[in-house]
Image (cartoon, rainbow, N blue to C red):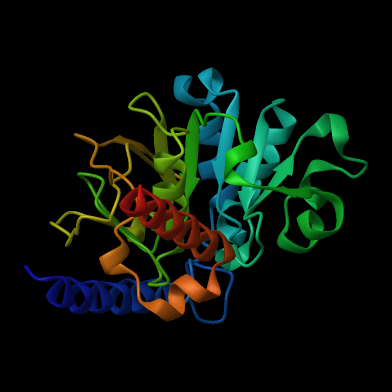
Length: 252
C-alpha cells in the first residue's frame, strides 16, 4: 500500500469511527469529527490504566493535550510522576510543558488542561527532557494489534520521532492509548514507516495487550511537507541544524 493509499484508507476509518461515536452519543462533544474523541467513560479508562503495573513502574510520563486524556494526566501528577505534556500543535520552540507537583501552585486537574498548562507550567526543549517511561497518546481508531489512527495532523508521530531521535524513547518505553470501546476495531489498519503502534489499549471496560511493537527509527523528512516543517519550530530548528551539520561535513 502506498502512502497516499494509506492516507485515504485512514481517512475512511476516521469517518466511520466518528460517525459511530456520534450515533451512539459516546462522546461529550456535539460531534467528534475532526477531533480526538472526548469519550464518555474516560475517567474509568484512566482508572484502569492507573491500576496497571506498567503505570506503577513509570516515573516519567509523556501525554497528549486532548480532553480525552485529561484524567490520565491528572492521575500522573496525583501519583507523583513527572509529566511532559505536548504543547498543542507543537507550536512553541520548546514543544512540551513540564508539569511537576513540586513546582505547581494549582491542583493537578487545573494544571493539566491546555489553558492551565499554558498559565502554570513552563515549556521544555527536547534536549532538556528526561527519558520517558510511558507515553499516553490520543487516538481515533486502534486495532487489536496496536495499529493506531489519529485525527490526521501527524503531531503524535512527530512527538514520538523527535523523542526517539533524542534517545528518550527506548524499547522498554510503553505506549498506551485510552479510548472508548467503539474506537477499538477488530480489523487490520493501514500503517506506514512513520507510524508507531501502541503496546496497550485501555477502555472503560477492558485492557488489551498488543504487539509486537512497531516504532519509527526517527523523523522521516520525506513524509513531511515544507509547510508542516515551517509551522513547527522544533522541526524547523532541527532541520536547520541537520542542514548545517551536513554542510560542514561536506566542507570538511
